[in-house]
Length: 253
Image (cartoon, rainbow, N blue to C red; front, side):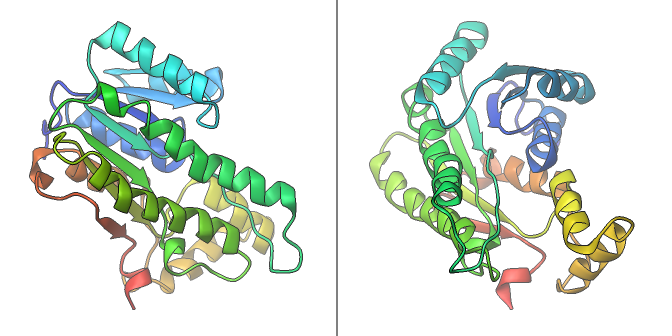
């Protein structure tokens, strides 16, 4: 699909690292100009430099509607168009029933649900027929592990959003889909693995996690990027409203 996004302008939230950066790399490699939206300027600058070309960045907080509106206004001012949005920014937290705090609940729904709404809603009036929105979900939308009920709840909420939103934009030519990863080898997964298994045990913990997958491994961030390119290109021109599990079969068995 090399060049399948040629000339398109894409905004990807939370793209300074992890899955978001893997998506940004694939978008750039397929001809798009990518605008990375994230919280820290130094991390954005590092990601833009690493991407090599056709990439810029804007500091914006997905939980603040004014931030997102200002970001989109800047994108239009600089590039004159918006063709694709990837709502990737999200956070995770763990707590079993009985110890979930109000702070945890509010923080996760604020970022993972409200943040998706504030990423997508102000973009819709700027998107042309043929434009796309991809929301990054999770296998936790259907198979939340123990102690991850709130995280799973936020991802199930996002799935419900899209089922309604494709009806709200009917006739606009805009497609909206969910891409739900399984375990992906990112910095955040490695930090979580270190906390759970201890220093020096990260590789073993990730290897064990991979063996639980039908493919026998965890994913690379750029594999999520290739799936996002598909959902954002003409190759998926009659695909909307789906939750595409890019999980190596993890949630399918």
